[in-house]
Length: 97
Image: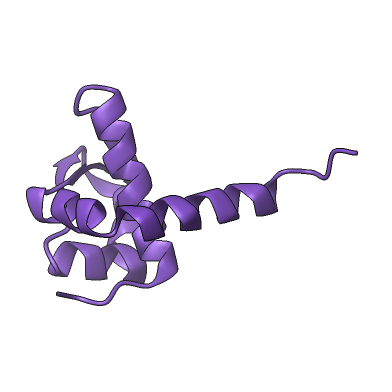
């Protein structure tokens, strides 16, 4: 199994949750971002993500879909991923006293 970074795990987990909660709803990113991002490229190469391209040139977008292999990774690592997800959200939230 490919070792993913925490950022890659969060991307995969959050996309998988979104797809599950919204009936296979996909996420979109600019194609140029997908092509230049090492994080996304590794997820694609390890077959955790797939995509469909829409449009051409600078306006092209990629529709991201978590594969069954990606879903399995999330299921196998669910405890770790949910804890990581909670920790990153807590860091983003302002302190409330």
